[in-house]
Image (cartoon, rainbow, N blue to C red; front, side, top):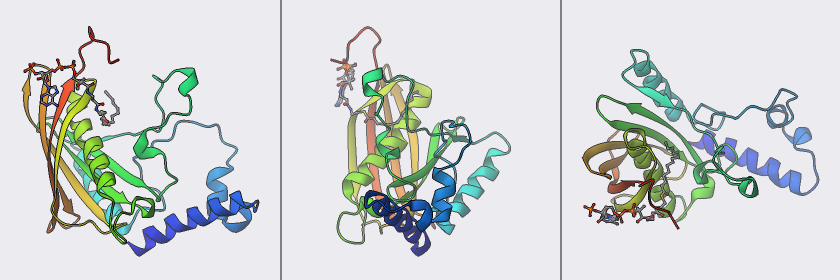
Length: 224
Ligand SMILES: CCCCCCCCCCCCCC(=O)SCCNC(=O)CCNC(=O)[C@H](O)C(C)(C)COP(=O)(O)OP(=O)(O)OC[C@H]1O[C@@H](n2cnc3c(N)ncnc32)[C@H](O)[C@@H]1OP(=O)(O)O
């Protein structure tokens, strides 16, 4: 936990240095290599380990990657930008991917098609603080929405959250790793009903429980 916070703060210090006119490369060669690479820019898959990931997150990631080997689970890639956005919205980014590595939402989602469920491994960084030392409830809700939404979107296609009901049972320590288990419970026409739990990496602490209703968009209806 301490190491991941340290890595996140290193990024933060380098960014501050950049604002103040100092070269991040001079301050941090690791960041410099990452930022000033001459390689062709290709969309970055953010659902892969980076140096801000804690040992706990790496360990769980490796365990799930092993489960992917027989095809029962698959890792879902994740990108900041969507090709769907129009030119004037070219700065649009997926909310959960708008932070430098380690400062905000670090996560990866795995999907099991037979069981219609996802497991999201999530490490909330220092920019997501609410009560000092703990994650902000809105950040937890965001991550639940994204994880449960993904579980709905794979079978449902383009869906939107109509209702999300969360019970926050225990505060989540900042920079710790939690496991968000989401399950598709029922489909009724365009309505997808899901539930989820948020637990500590060792599964001993139940932090939050939630239920969600997602609606498959009707192509005949306009959103506005
Ligand atoms: C492949 C995709 C990739 C995506 C990648 C990125 C994923 C990242 C994931 C990020 C995830 C982030 C996700 C986000 O951030 S989504 C952003 C937050 N959500 C919104 O902004 C949604 C706003 N709401 C709407 O636009 C509309 O209300 C929607 C589209 C949801 C439904 O309007 P629509 O006109 O289409 O449907 P309808 O009104 O005919 O209703 C249909 C049925 O549903 C029932 N109903 C409706 N609402 C409720 C309710 N609140 N409780 C109980 N029931 C409700 C209704 O009674 C009816 O039932 P029935 O009469 O048929 O029995």
